[in-house]
Length: 233
Length: 77
Image (cartoon, rainbow over all chains, first blue to last red; front, side, top):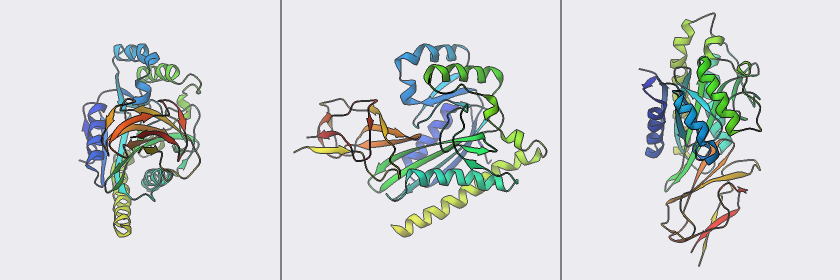
């Protein structure tokens, strides 16, 4: 099984957290069955947001806090998650982490003749400098968590890849929560995004091959970097 | 003698500032060396800040304040 199925996004995030705590090189490709909206713990704690979170839950969508930064991310069948855990020395910066996970996605998509870039994408969910984009539209968002250990640092690198757009109800709840949490940011626009389904619409069988290509690309990079870190230690 | 809690200067390459997203121990609380006491965030990266020594925590930069690499955000004495 290439993609680990979890009933809820909370379960998938808990597995990522366990991998992060273990602190050993690891990767996980996962998808949740239930629809949820995931947001940074720091945002979820805001008192002013609590009424909106209550409304989102009442509408039938789980609200799940996560330990990385950024904005609100839709979880469920629409999203494929790639998590990579990498122990490393102090020379491995935030930018190195982003280059690693964005490069992994780029390499996997190259196998399907899809070229990617990185950059901000106004109107996209959880916008940031290290989005993976195709022709200016956001395909994936990335984030990281870093902790210090007695043996060095450990990074959890995460990418949320849009397989298809969230269904209309899910999208509407995300927009409402986004406006409440980030009132100064642009409104979310569906046309600011692209998806694996859209990019591979002419060859649907590629959609089934994509997770395998992604895990192979992640494995290659993780092994290569782990060996480099061991040699440097 | 107090030990400063400093945001490490090698966490990221650029000059971006970060936000202290959480203090996980209170001002004047007793903390143990190596315990997770704070979280900071920049560019969608959350970093854990550990207590550099055991003793009494003194917080100088509060939650939601902005800080730069190398800034002292508290001390343990």
